[in-house]
Length: 190
Image 1 (cartoon, helix red, strand yellow):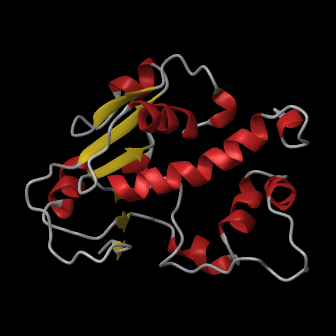
Image 2 (cartoon, rainbow, N blue to C red):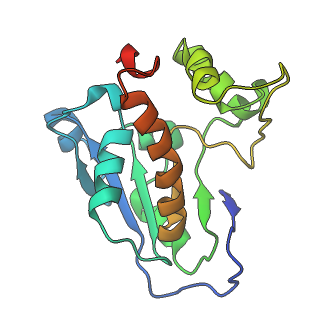
């Protein structure tokens, strides 16, 4: 069963909203192999490969009016391979739910082996710890964030309500803006 979380005060499920589930495609191979239950999130031009999957998600969120009570999900081309889940299964599971976020993380051990997602990410993306320390300086050497399976999401394997995505984008845009500033050390690295 997926992990769910509710950030709002509402307890009534919305039975009418159809989930908006997308699979990011980068090239002809990912386009032809995508799960047909997903809509296409086009990243064929891959104009900013340095931002990976954030770039097409960002473009969508900046250019689309989101419904507060509708679910939106943006999944990688390897989602089915890593989770064994189909878009139709996700869509059926989301109908009638009211949680703000539903997580489909396939690798729970990743949330158990590390203090937080930044530490876990650093194993596959060396330098991530340094980047986050630069973006979010700490006054002590104690870990700033400790996470577990209820607060950890592998890749972008989740669906969330429109209200969540707006708050998510606001936070992510702070990091994006800092990283894009060439005079800021993190921005000089791309």
